[in-house]
Image (cartoon, rainbow, N blue to C red):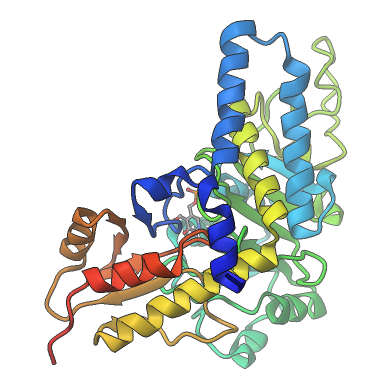
Length: 378
Ligand SMILES: Cc1ncc(COP(=O)(O)O)c(C=O)c1O
């Protein structure tokens, strides 16, 4: 076996879910990979038997998560904050910058609400919004950037799966001094992200989708040069540098992105997310990308051959692990329930059936899914 088939076969045992389901819902909530489950189990047993006696090891999981995340996106561990989800990361940037009336933000109308509302709310502070479409040609985006203070976009759209050209948009932002914010949750773990090559200033993602980790734990990257410009908007005992000294009343901030962390972290989440990112790094993001793209392309071909309406045209540059389609006569929720009867997990989204296979899904799994779907009668 070679290529995508070789990779999915090699790692299939790392995904116990394959014994129960054909799981095509990683764009919603992924099943835990075995490594993450084992790490979480270790912590549960440790805490159960010893309380916090091994706290050093718990702290190590936080440092390990920062390090693994930094490797995944070519950042430095001190530019990584551990947050509770993508939304918290986005809010930290949206609320933490010192906006002035008349500042302008470029945002995109097809975004998931998490990367829409925080920018829209800035209107209350006199910030102007320029709303574009993620499908707009680069020239149109280029026209909107000069004079804008910040541009916020998702790497991969949650519904259509459209993947933007991170580098091209980032370069435009950099050339015009516009802060470049990326909601990375639908692409991180599958596609290479390089904050240097892509000119990213800040990025947020939770671990429970393509990173194969648990819910309720995410990461926020903030480029070092912006740390002092983004105020921590949640303030507690761990934001200051002296936080280990409980008698201190010195609020000087931590020198790193840890300044955005407010209080005790989600240790269970850190164990899980660290293990899942380290696992993905071991598999190799290029291998993950190739396998996900092969499976999604197989679905795309098969769905079109059966007569389905697929939401967008797929290309090598803009395709992702998300494919949304619909039947002209059968409601998406009905289709998803029907697939569930066949032990296939999908999601209904705004009238579309959304499928999102990860790299361990085999070509045979996809054929089985396509067989389970009725032909569209013309
Ligand atoms: C693009 C995008 N951003 C953010 C989120 C959710 O973020 P959070 O981790 O805050 O729940 C989703 C969830 O579907 C998403 O698709």
